[in-house]
Image (cartoon, rainbow over all chains, first blue to last red; front, side, top):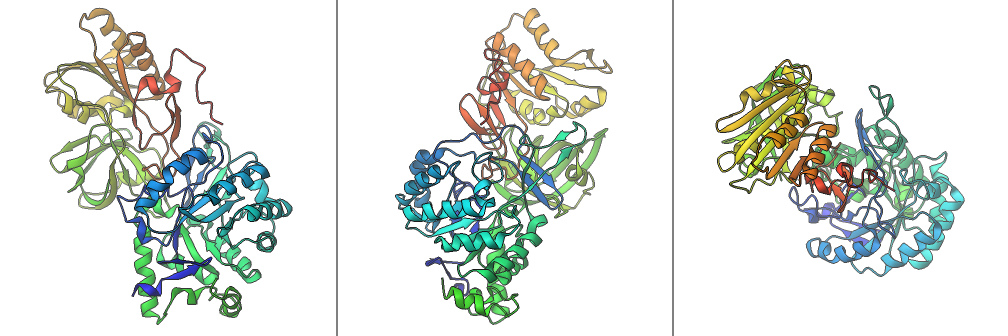
Length: 317
Length: 267
């Protein structure tokens, strides 16, 4: 039964295509009171930097219609502490762990990539060049095609583990950037990161977020995510990790049909902490009812050619 | 740390925008401690975040929530009728330290800060001497205390407009107690508007009295997965949802009277 959901993603066998969105799932164990995290395909852990970061001051969360803004600003304990906690996390999780790495400058990306290369428990790396909440680095790399090229190239040189480059939707042409990171050796792309947005407290006549702007996530961004994955997957030959407002089985299927090989759950976990279990069951039922032997058959199904060309290009990647 | 569909058995307006909701649960009431909170799910799916609501009281298998209708989510809660179900998550966070006996305790609640106080007093009053200072803008803001059990505790009420109790604020009442009563206060518990808690913490610190404060932050996950409610404390970054919401006042940077400029120097 379960093998209908088994997939190969960047050469790694996953129980199913369900992953978590970095920054929404802590360091892998926070949700274990609600569901067994080993039910996931893989866990993408909260973003890390070389040095510990306190993140942004003031209010970091604002709910918006069908979505939310966050301006956490990459608060994290730093790579040294990360290395200390990873073995105990791996003891409880037998699914692949994905580290999300960040830097302010190119050298920092290279440095942290070298560190993560040495951590046996980490099987894949999400290279975050799209965080909208840090002043330097972050999105600056993802928004500039040549910076995206450079950081991917340099990180590739020091990392043998599969690299997923997380792309920013806050760009004019996301297809161009996806093609560039593919050229530079990315094994996959993750999209979309959050959309830069704002909310105002009319009583205080001020932005709600302490950092003024923040990243929009949740069902509100889903149509944008679908459109971008649809465009990107038709232009590249590497897998897409799709995310952006997935809150139901139907949403998950839509993401796969526009071209995502695997999907990440983020904001949807907050209101429904057992969402991964529901979607997993829903996808199994969907496969059964539609005579689908393996869920990967629907990747790109909404492309003009039904996804044949893209699935051929992926060739089981 | 459970998810449970609980049944609303009462949901009434106390005064103005203040409401009291009672729900019936199974696992949760057994595990809930004073000062903890729950994440209440909205029915309208366009509200993607649960609302963190402080635990007001536990009575058998019934949980009580005293809440203010402030935005669209809490406004939705006011429309829940008896018999309807609601999905709640909890109990969450670190509550007040109530493992005490034989102590002289002052409990200070201000306005909506009355939310965790009922259960706190209930938990403490059999083994300790309690003085409860209730404060608010006006009589409506403290009306909820009519439903508290005050047997064996001293009650003092202060309102800004003097519509009930003395005209003034809770901090003045606390100072008066310190001046006029010989018996040393062992611990102060407080919940209320930030400036009030800050002033209470300052008085506590000046008099070498332990003080626990209950903080409030916007939250997304409620279980330290999103890091949305982090605050800078003297012990580093702490999550209000997990390390709090109750903290020792001396751990909180912005109520530190020794270093008044030590506020949130986030990166």
